[in-house]
Image (cartoon, rainbow, N blue to C red; front, side, top):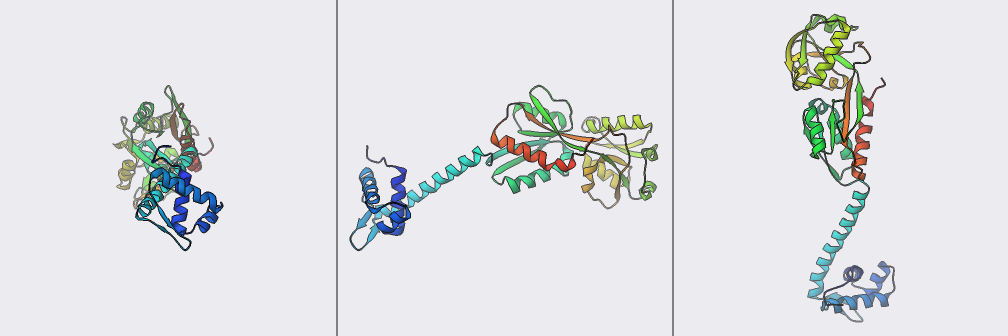
Length: 305
């Protein structure tokens, strides 16, 4: 074999002797006998053309070349072990990076919960959350820009698969100063003609369409006072007394000082849904682990129909 080529096992043998400074102790550490250990060190020295160890009946010590080789060998062994560990973690879906595109309303509670659970259960998987509008989530999933998406859009498109991960009721968000805030039992008819903070059609369209259909089904006509594109903006408008709003129940986590949330009975078909969208054919261990984690994390928000 050409000079300079040696086996990984020979390097491990050398490191054991260099650290123990004893062939007998190194052999015991490696669970082998001393003669084959000595042969491996001799072969290593011959192949690299250097004397690494000074030997006598009384001592074993490193030469200057051996000292240098020892530090390099330790680095190589640690890198190799790290590479093997990484490969095993990747095979189990415990290592890598994923990107999640999400609609703004998911940022209030769902995305933080997912990120926290990933930090706990998959600490070696990085997450890149990207806020988008619903149609952007679908297009980004199709183009491969993101690995997962959270959107309120119901229809899958082409190779896009969807899983309903949130199915929760709506609640009323009412300014604390409004007379209805004093009532503990409310019906949707109580809000007929009342000032209403709506979602915009262009950027909050899916929720706006759902609520418009709900008002029509319930036979009421709130007075739209102002429109906002995102849930946190709608809630802040309510907090400043500009009208009531109807928002997903999970939004109640936003505890603002001048707002109260109230349950109200609504037609069963009107609920707040969120879908996890993925691209067909993504079957890596990492993808499957993260998908399961997202579904499990959001399970408390999947109420029965």
